[in-house]
Image (tube, rainbow, N blue to C red):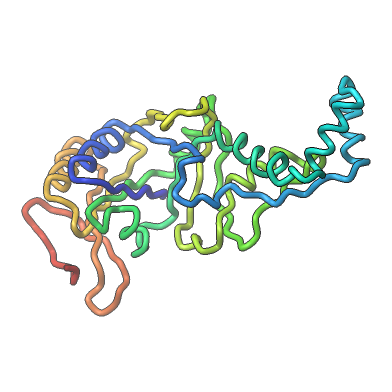
Length: 261
């Protein structure tokens, strides 16, 4: 199962529930708008001059001597931190849109940060969601995020450039390990606020409500459950003798106090 944490105001939560859960809308966020500005970094590994010349003799033999000299200076000269690292990073990110899913639902940090301090909810996606999204024409890759203290390398004019780009897009600081994130990548026009795709709502197995989720959200989820008999509605809770999180089935007009405030 894959999980998507949802936060926002009460009105926003109700609107997102209708769009994402009832109707199957899936939102891909532009890479350049992520909350961590140090994502999608890479270590620039400049080629040797021999590697640079060999690549151009095969793939760009039409380039003039002056063009080659200018290109080489951009990689090895004083502006290399911009021309070989910052600018390519921007170009890589501008057409990439990302769906971030979690591999777990029981993280205190994610409920506090991503689900509006437990006022939000989690969408529970069936594993088939990944296959469905991968079959769409704008699919640019998917996979588990790698967590590391080192950024991926970009080796210009050598190695598998696509593999290196994928590593850049799916690697994060080890401090984010608790998320157990899975990413789906889409290509789209630069400058869009998001890419929206529609999937079969039956790919959603159910929702988990935060402990502070509004009653209207619970009512909406239970109303949908009446039309989808296999749709589960749970509420997050905690064991009485530990901080371990648990799920409890939501029933009309029943509220179990789980030790929260």
